[in-house]
Length: 51
Image 1 (spheres, rainbow, N blue to C red):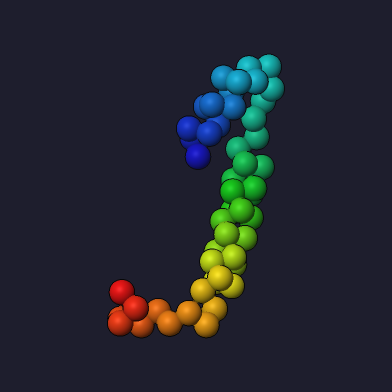
Image 2 (cartoon, rainbow, N blue to C red):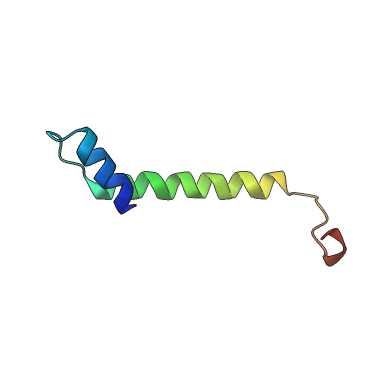
């Protein structure tokens, strides 16, 4: 997360980057990705024999 903020700070030096907004966006993205993975694995046999 800090690397993203530093990269954005170097890219846009005149703009103040609000880390709270970036954290919120990251959390929403992570929740959406988790939901997509759960939907994609619905009905998939994930027992020990699968691996």
